Length: 159
Image 1: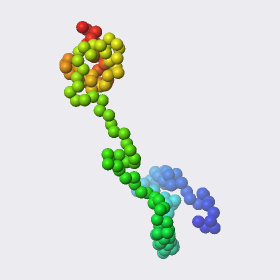
Image 2 (image 1 turned 90 degrees about the vertical axis):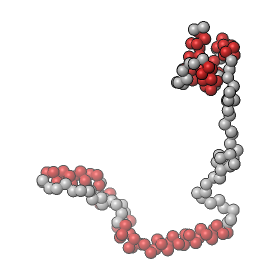
Image 3 (image 1 turned 90 degrees about the horizontal axis):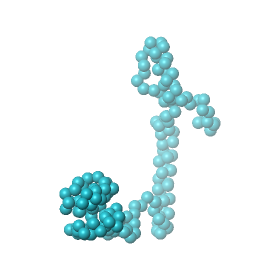
Image 4 (image 1 turned 30 degrees about the horizontal axis):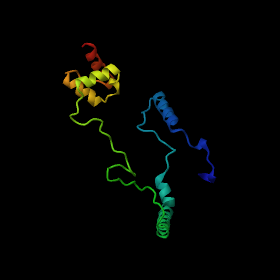
């Protein structure tokens, strides 16, 4: 920037300039341009030509300074390091294992289910237990837990 001052009037709004360019082309029966000219984009070639060597040297100096720092301070934590996974596959420390709510093949009997229905505790049962019961009674298994609970209660109400 000249003299280190930012003058917004020197940098036109690209969207607004594109709009004006299309209006001008339509009004004067000119060809509509293929792409907008954005004067706010940096001129990378010119920047590279002016300061390319200095930035490369600066980067090399930074790399050397970092290597010296790491050599002098081996206990310093590195940035961007990933956490290691533990034996059970979870990142970090101890992770709780997922509970299995019912054992396979553990089906609730008709008497137990009827007792749960009479106490109004059918909703406290797991979905797996409810589905196992519905399977034995040939009731539909689809839907959410509330739907299955309604089917079980309707089964006992019809008896």
